[in-house]
Image (tube, rainbow, N blue to C red; front, side, top):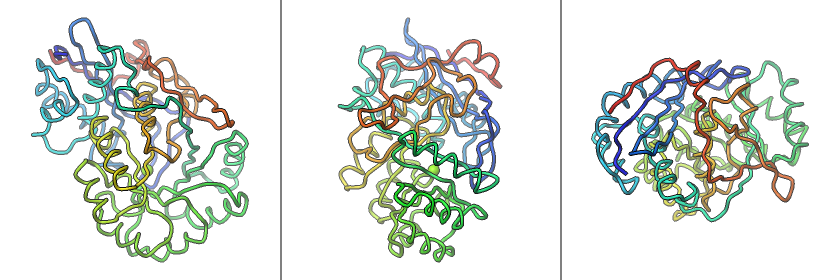
Length: 369
Ligand code: MG
């Protein structure tokens, strides 16, 4: 599988309504799409670090430049049999996991097509359906949130995730817990707090949350370990785990009892599988997170989520949840499981960007060949 052509697209995908988190608000999702060509074969990858470097140090614009100027030239003309070899070819360039993920996920898609093997099977999965959760961003009023949760519970979602930030915090959780006493739910702080907020996290112990996701700084492991020792609710790391090395350190320090794994944040599927395996060996359960990718990136997340140690319902959303028209086709739809729970089904056909929408939504494009 010699890589002989690489096309990169920085796209802005308009959302139905803005996505509000602890770090801001996005009206459209900026992503990097990558098409790898190998002879007559071609395959797509996607990474969605957003428009501004607020979720992490990367933006879609920076990922586009790093991929165009450094990563693509480093892998062009080379043949890789394993994901680790591809990663090795990019390893001299530090960090930039989202940029690397666009190439890595495209390479796994290419391997799937080349070998005629479904992606989830290539990654080592033995199941083809998993449940997903329902997520709700910050809203104007608590009264706006409760009907949405009610709807999710009626639809059979097995867990709910709420964003958590100053001004949208304990009183919101109190109201939700009062209204839904037995609901499995957790909060995502998107690194909006510090260890000085320990008392607030101690108060959260009263609400039987499944976990508190990324409470502290985006690059911290030490304070999370300190927090975890002082509260009962499990801590889950998201932003802080950007590499296999950091995952190993987090496990050694006891920084979390859950790990959220997103292919984009850790450099692609190669590292996502390695982190999954490390967590499994350490007895730490995982779940797959999302960056509001198109159906193309969501298909990679779906394949990953089939691995055994992803035991908490994933953040993988149907296309219609965020987009009027998904950039990729077919759009992702939820498939109800035997017990009535919404979930996602792994497929042997990965979703591909639509040429018409790609042309409408592209901001920058480059071809390296
Ligand atoms: Mg998160």
